[in-house]
Length: 119
Image (cartoon, rainbow, N blue to C red):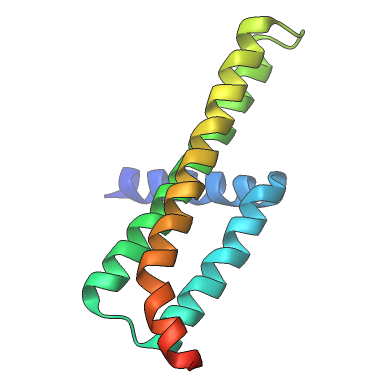
């Protein structure tokens, strides 16, 4: 059990590093807070919350993996190298794809009730 708590501590340290070192992660945190607040205000259904939670989680996982890849590439290849650049660019593209998916899910789930509420 002690090892599990230690592993949890490592994961929390990683999350703290992510938030402290990555401006985009702080943007994702703000976006997460806005989406959760709007979802609560709209009274989303369980299915709506599930889709929103999936979208939020997708972006956070992509951002965390992107950061891990960037840190690893920087350690393995401190000098500029085309393959290092490609690895970092593809990892960043994963975040972009995840964010675009999250925006689409957000528009589909939050859009109709938000439009109805505004009328």
